[in-house]
Length: 207
Ligand SMILES: [Zn+2]
Image 1: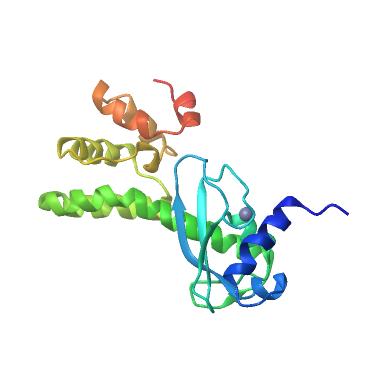
Image 2 (image 1 turned 90 degrees about the vertical axis):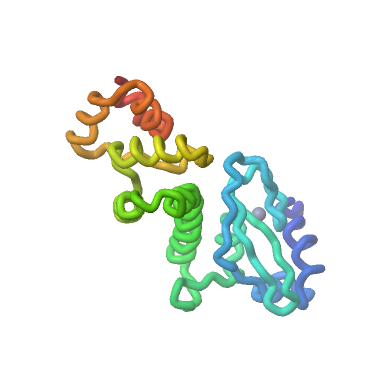
């Protein structure tokens, strides 16, 4: 019988970095560290099964030998022996909660990346600290920034030469007020918001 190539690769890559020689036993020595890398483009390889075109890398560590591997989330989910803890340190055993925990780790990472340029702005612009904090708190609770907040924050980051990725600043357009506001903007202001919108949003709110 022909084996799966990803299974053969996983055995080949995992055993030398583990204490046990049996694959299933070796898997139990590994746990997800909570670290995620968003590479922005999907051109990374899973260091376990060698699957290509990954955008996100999740870190697993062998707690006996302290070896690390950057793998795809699907490998962690596929090999249930790899240990995943929740935030309180409880080991998650069913597929649904394990997936939810990996999704949460990724979301946290993306929020962290989005907030980096705003942390720089917060340090520079003392007068606007409250405003930045208020905008971030909207972002954290609703998952997106209001267009009003984005205009102010993008203008300020631009003025202070702070690099940021518009795609990491999702736009909140769920209220009439938000949509109506877009039509009051000057071209350069609207441009800031347009850059942050998803392509779906741009289509739907073409102005
Ligand atoms: Zn993999």
